[in-house]
Length: 177
Image (cartoon, rainbow, N blue to C red):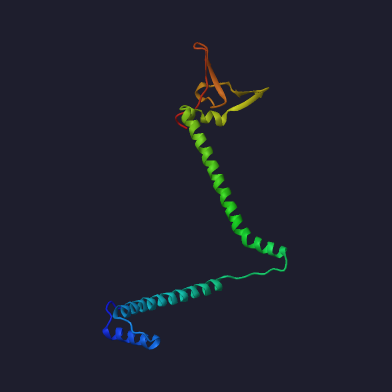
């Protein structure tokens, strides 16, 4: 679009309208009509370009869509299952794996909280591993027998009774283990 209009363009515009309509127009009207004509020309170029781009996009979309027709509902169902079942199964397996690992993480945190709440828990590990249990009615007992040799007591299996202090010593572990 030109920012200045030549006198020649104004004269041509006035002449064209006078020849067409039989009326003479003043210079300002000719200037305004010339401006409108230029703006309309630019606008029509933009519209044509937009129409062209829309047409290209429509052709691209039409080329990407594959219409599928089926003879029966059953055939359509199995086609849909074959298209959607594999990604659905992958998603389901993924969700199940995530749920499993979250559950395992929760169990681990629960065990860690248990160990943290009992500071002496670490000393009882070997006793828990080796200890024999006996159940009478609704009560569970740890089964220990008197130690034959105090220097080689078996953890979780034997104890020593000290008569003077009236206590039972149950070995929990040794520093060498």
